[in-house]
Image (cartoon, rainbow, N blue to C red; front, side):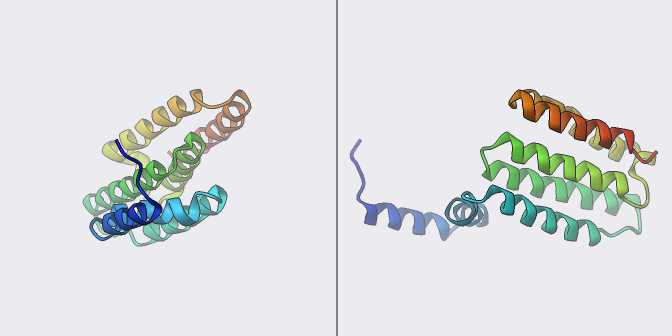
Length: 150
């Protein structure tokens, strides 16, 4: 396999960015946001907050559909960052918003299971972190579960 020149790499990146929206978003993350992970997380949280505000609350079907769409976007944004801390922080934020959601999601079986599955996923992700981070995120998760709006 041969080495590529910087100009060839630039052309490949530009060509890649022309096609899929996710490719463009990943490239934007790598070029601009990866150097400041905290700002990236805050921007994603703002976007997720806006998506929660825009959920159609007229029926449980539309609520489930909206929440699943938000979770899909969250997973996409978390996948751009390789750091597990980003994933854990975004999932905890998502579960916090679900706890505060009105009408309460815990009265709906499908949304309650979705919430519980995210908590299981957060626990698994926390186990792969450094001990200090495990403790911090574990306390945050315990606080989240204690404030569960039933």
